Amino acid sequence: MDSPRGRIYLMKMASEGEAAITPTWVHHFDTCLGCMSCMTACPSGVDYGRLIEATRPQIERHHRRSLGDSLHRRLIFALFPRPDRLRALRPLLGIYQRSGLQALVRRSGLLRLLPRRLQTMESLLPRVDARSEVPAFTPAMGERRARVGLILGCVQREFLSEVNAATARVLVAEGCDVAAPEEQPCCGALMVHAGEEEPALAFARRMIDVFEAAEVDVVVTNAGGCGSNMKEYGYLLRDDPAYAERAAVFAANCRDVAEFLVELGPRAERHALRLRIAYHDSCHLQHAQRVVSQPRALLAAIPGIEGVEVPEPAICCGSAGIYNLVQPDAAEALADRKAALIAPLSADVVATGNPGCILQLRAALARSRQNTEVLHTIQLIDASIRGAAR
Image (cartoon, rainbow, N blue to C red; front, side):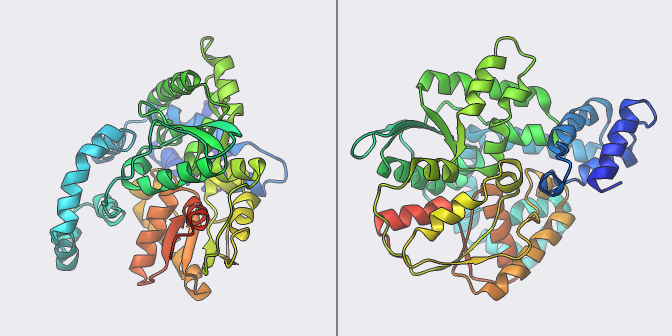
């Protein structure tokens, strides 16, 4: 019952009244990563993604979770989709890290007194450095080729802002006007993947409003999970008479940054980076969006790069939206497996296309005492265009 076929059987039984939504029934769905690798593997083309994302809201409507589980999920959804609240946390987290308190707490074993899920949340904390601002509008360098809307994300906007800054620089260097409206909301991906349907749809409507007003040719995202969700806006809002058509147009104009750059074609000169790079496929990028060759092509075009493949590329690193925060043991086992596969590659950098993967892999590599850096693919392209030193 923990296989895709078994879960589909459970969905069918519940929909036909032959099974109740019991804690045991729910457990089989809570343990699903939602990585969509079964869709890539399925010879019959079963759209498991839409089935699981239709099931999870039913769970939230009809199943009463334990108090601890409910409170933990409320904490996640009160923070992670809210960049304003994450920004308010930055000074406190900065003090926690720079004062040496984090190192002391980790060495002392005090973390073991916390619930397992909170231990995991602490282990995934990125380093709080100076925030890289992306202007609301940046004009293209040279002749303009496109007007692009840039999705800033939530956690990425506040804790991996250097990825957004690198994305904007690359797009500008390649001849794109870049609009990055500060008022853009969360895309709703975390809520969709966790069954929080109504808030997810509200965010989707707001996102469409903001980028329609920006009058862009294409909407570009640098987060695999966000992009896969926004490409589904047409389906998610299909029954909303005020948004159905607009959502379909918006979804058709969404591109992952690697996908868009390959479509656009290179114009800016690339400078050599003498690096051995292992590329890790984000699940929602490779399985949901089917963006596989494009990031590799962009990296291969950088002079001096030696690319190596991480074995078992179809298997998730364990991040999977909020999966690593609600199923920490399984997520950590997957991440440690990935880290063990990376170790023999002797890579200088692991490149990937999703912020969740970046944080998950950094934590796993730190646990295994590997010094390999984990960066977004776009950061390497940016470094090559700028001729930046390693």
